[in-house]
Image (cartoon, rainbow, N blue to C red; front, side):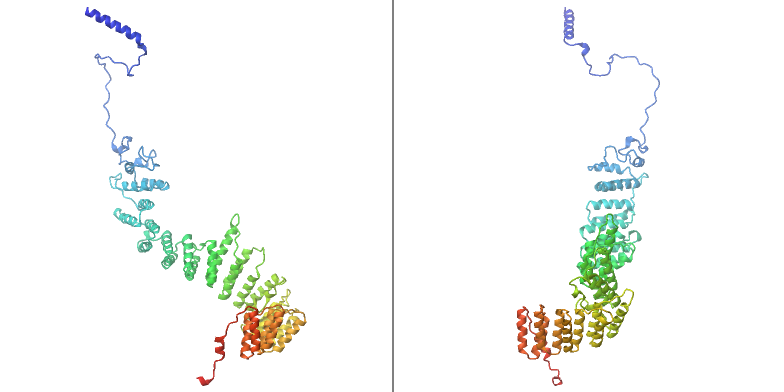
Length: 618
């Protein structure tokens, strides 16, 4: 009964289960076929080979890529340089992976890695890789030994990571432990660290040490430029000039930055002679002769040199300006640079004061180059050139320049005073009478010969210089003969300056009457006198101790519209005091107050005048 009930129960449950779930829709939990739980007989099979052993660690198998430090082939193979999972471009490379990577590299591979990482500035990784690499073994089981190039890359990585100069020196000292001698590049990295922190004294000592060591660590161009630039920035000009001189003697090249800084420092310190010496030495060397400061600095050098009357430095400054002008003209598109004409006039004045013909030629050449034929030089430029030639004693070129000057400005209105021998052409007058009548005769005969050539040169201004020169040496006869030759020999008409020069010659020899006759003759011909004419008459009367006549000429001068200067009134007052003419003295004082002049006192001059030079006081 119980078995029957169990059979019925199982049947009902099966029917109920089949109604509720579709047995064909059930998904098995395992994808493998169901296995029978009952034992099955063993089928016979072919005999199999035994399982092989794993490969040797030194065989280069990928199974040992994380810890295979013996195989150098992995470091040089093209499949990978870095263990799998280590990204070379990642900034967060772990020390463990770098350590593992270091075990796969030899010296050559490490140098290649350093080259790649230097380009991407992975300085921290370079430092860690080198430190791990020198603690590993090579393929022969010996410790890795770096060469000087690898060590220099390690030094560079530390320098870029802001290591101090002392730390870099310690690393250089550690190179001896690996039997590596530091070279010039090693010390240059230390010098760069010293320059960054401004350690000038330490840099000098290190450079001296490099000079005393072997040829491998002898200073190069970069060494000298680093030290001299540091010393110049520290305003240690003497020490900097010493190393610059040493660098030039050894044939090294100065950088443009060091050269420019040297120029600025020397000018600021007033060391113009030292700067000239440096520039001169650079010009004698093929590798340094192209050095040239910026355009603005060249103008500043010229300005300072002109103020100091330094002819050689002035010449170098103009040479630098000429280089810039040529560079601008050769550029594409061209950049037309021009030197300031006032600067050139100053250079001509320096050439006249220092008697430097090279500076004179350079000044005029750079002026012509700057103008480019678009206009003529100014009158001041011509007068400066005449002055320079006259100071040098080159009268032939001086009168040739005067001819050019007259051609350019002779017919221009209001330019009469430009050709006055008393003012603008006075340096030429002084040069004509430098050796007395001999020079004056030479100049006159040359002018006479030039007037008879195929292209005659006839100049009243040149003859006026000769007349005034004769008057300055108290040679009245030559002055008068030259004045007559203006109309007789040369066929020209005397101008106001000719008459003034003749009046000056008469006045110097106390021929006041003749000077007055010249004045009357001139006014009779319709030649209008100028202020110089009246001043010459006043001086002539004062030399003759006739202060009343001098005052009358001053009155005529004021009526003509000219204003006497303060120095003339002082001369007249002095003569009135010495001649005890108090009425005339009062007239002079009244005129001075009218013109708002303060004549002042002449107490010290009167003391010298009243000294008793007799032998009684001896």
